[in-house]
Amino acid sequence: MERKLFKSLPGMAAMGALFLTMGAQAENLQVSIEIPRLSVAEYHKPYVAVWLEDESRSATQIAVWYDVEMRNNEGEKWLKDLRQWWRRGGRSLDVPVDGITSATYGPGEHTFEVSINGSDLADLAPGKYRLRVEAAREVGGRELVEIPLTWPLEKSSLPLSVKGSEELGQVRIALQP
Amino acid sequence: MKSNFASVLVAGLLAAGVAMQAEAHRVWILPSSTVLSGDDPYVTFDAAVSNTIFFPDHVAMGVDAVTATAPNGKTVALENASRGKYRSTFDVQLKEEGTYKIGLASSGLRAFWKDAEGKRKMWPGRGQQANDAEFETAVPKDAKDLRVTQSSRRVETFVTAGAPTNDVLKPEGVGLELVPVTHPNDLYAGEEASFEMLIDGEPAKGVEIVLIPGGSRYRDSQNEIKVKADAEGRFNVTWPSAGQYFMEAEYEDDKARAPATVRSGSYSATFEVLPL
Image 1 (tube, chains in turn yellow, green):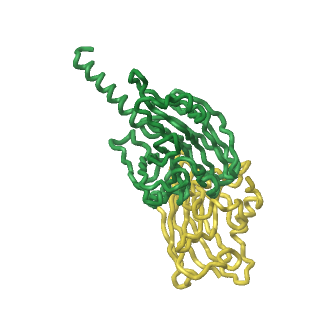
Image 2 (cartoon, helix red, strand yellow):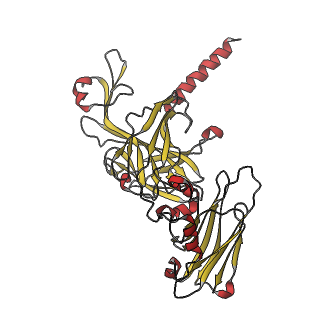
């Protein structure tokens, strides 16, 4: 299987997502995701996927956190456990993808920004979308939350947020100049 | 045994059990998972003939005739095949991205008749593969109650590495076949899936399909879903819940090629329905 085309250091991929600000317009979509601290005997950081889905269920990928450091790409074996994301484009994605994939994160609030003009978001047609965030944890649970929104984002409507109940805490989106 | 009554009761139950078995045997190949990610993943399969869906309680299914077809149409070797008391197991490595078909198909003539003493005879013998060339010599044409059928059987399942593909889903035009309109590895609870059934490449009009969710061992009823295909052989099903499903269809008509007078086909498959 040829999946190693974009082989890059995991840290680089995360940095791509954080500082992709080379577009003409400096406006960024800011996404904050809270990973709850869980009292469990065996804890593994969750795999997380973030994508925008239009009304015909077509997806624009924003972020995927998975175990990029395992040897022989073994971390990719559990990507399908993000089962909604897997169906909505994950299974056609040639991971790792610069600017989208990164290593997993533990409990806490994690914020990243995506340049709207410097990413696939630049091609989004105006309309109704859902920002969907899915988390799946090894020997743990799985949760999917979503924020309905209208694109382009209306500054007055922001920030938008939703709260997960098991595997995800607060998920928040905003615009950053 | 304390009384004759008890032994009569036990014998009666045994007889009923045997009769039920003859009616209800299901042949299935069950994959450990159907939707896979990562490099060159493996799927392990159980194959058995049983009464209870996905619970091996009768006899292992022989896997010598089982074929795994890769997305590119090539045959892939079954690895670690082993026959146990109640079920066979084997592994398939998905080295190519796309959808694989794992199953067996057979077709040929079958004959049933009574000999001079009124004993029932059949050709080919139970568990034997038909060889149509032997029909002329093996079956007495003037036998009493001779019934010759052109019969086919298919048992299959599907697994996908990465994005689903459709190449292995194309019909072969032989026997009773399922043509998925909804991809068989893209099934979700609460959603409707569409399929088409063909007999020798033509719509299997009005064929009756039964779908049974796995885990029947842990409930009182089969919870079977019965659907009838329309004039184009099409049918839809809305999956009530996530899980593994067994599907079965039987077809029979009189459009057989001579010397057969009856054409019959049986189809069974295993699907995995995921939660939304």
